[in-house]
Every structure is written in C-alpha cells, then in structure tokens.
Length: 291
Image 1: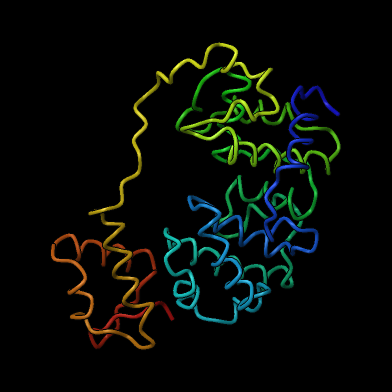
Image 2: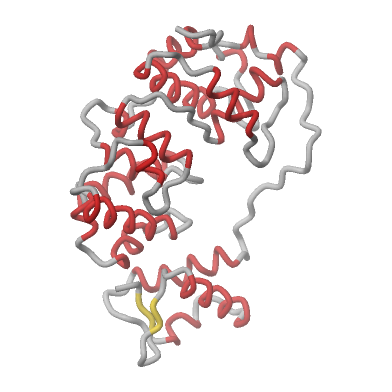
C-alpha cells in the first residue's frame, strides 16, 4: 500500500457494499465501460442502467455504432438528457473503428484524443477497463477528498490543481489496487458521503475525516445553485427532440411548433439544436435527426 491513510478501510468497505453494476463485472468490455462513463455524466445510475442495457444490446462494439447514422444514437439516447453526449459517443465509435481497429485504446493519452473524452473519462476507462493507475476525480470523489482531507463540506466549483495533486498522492502504488481504490472512493461518495445527507455513522473513514472531526462546519463559499429544468431552454430542447425521436420520418415545422407556446424561446432552442448538430433542417422545410 501507499501512504494513503484511507485505502485499507475504503477498499474493505467497497468489497462488502459495492453495487452490482454490469459495467463493473470482470467480463465487461472496454467499450461497455466507455459507454457507461459517458452516460453517467450528470445522470444517476438508476436512469442509466436501462439505457446502457439497450445501447449495448444494439451496439455491442464501436463498429456496430459507427455503421449507423449519428441520428440513431440521438434517438437511442432517448431521455437521458444532455443529448450531445450521444453525438460524442457516435464520433468516438467512428474514431475507434477507423483509427484503432475497432478496439478501445488502452493508452491514456490516446483515450484523451478521442472525441468527447476528457480527463475524467480517459482516467476512468484506463483504470476500470485496463487496470491502470490514474487519479479519477468525479463529483463524488472530489467531495469525499474535500471532506476527509481538506475539512470542507464541498469542493470548489471548478476542479483545482491542488485537488489533482491530492488525488494523485493518495493513489496506491500497485496499478490494480489503484484502479480498485478509484472506484471504491467513488462509490463511497455516491452511497455514504452524499452531498446533502452524508451518513457519517456508516462511513469507514469517519474517524479520520477532517470535516467531521472539525464539527462539520457549514460551507461558506460562493452560493451553490441547484440546477433547474422546468421552463428552461433545456426543457424545450428535450421536447423538440422527443418529437423527432418518436417519428420514423422527417417532421414538418408545425409538428415542432406545438410543443412550446413561447415562440421566441422555442425558436432559440431549435436553433441551438441545429447548431449542436442534433437536428438537421432539410431543404423542404422539414426537420430530422442527423443522417
């Protein structure tokens, strides 16, 4: 082990408490892990599970997805939210198929070069699919480390170099153990050290947690605004996309106009969908998912 004062307790806790998720099983492919990581961005596991199963049944390899239009990825994405992720996943599948022989690359730097794959996703896939040693910093991990090590209730809004350095300093030296540590501390944040109601009585490192030992001081940083959805452009975009997903053919403009009363907001949302490549305006005035 390393100087990590938490790893033994957290790994033992994970062994007993980890959720049985299909992308964590030994037989999970690197592609299935990559799909899960992109789906899980800003989306809870309970919503991702059925979507992941449906996706993997239809497109079990990157080549399967790359062989279909990107609009089919958007259609299959259904109501997971942030549908640009579907386009990124399609672009990723094309790159893997055309540039890497249809196999998800096992090199961290190469993973980072794939469309839509950022620092977190590259580290997660390298660790979880290939057992490598990389610091993995998602929202849950950042919160656990902020509380346990820094003694604050919440991490900064934007990830800092200090957080990355801390996460790297806590990595166990053995790659396979480091990969296990990465998923274990993530699970601890998801199930125990939650944002609103942390279950400190159930936490395996409560006795070492700087925030708990300091009396759980309240967060005193910039206001943390909850994400709203109702009435936003995001909601309008979702309704417009739903019309296109539910139709096997391009739809006339009138079919989109009925989904939202505010014409200015509706047109703004439609323009944004077109700009993002999620909707294709056809020459005859109809609209379709990208071909």
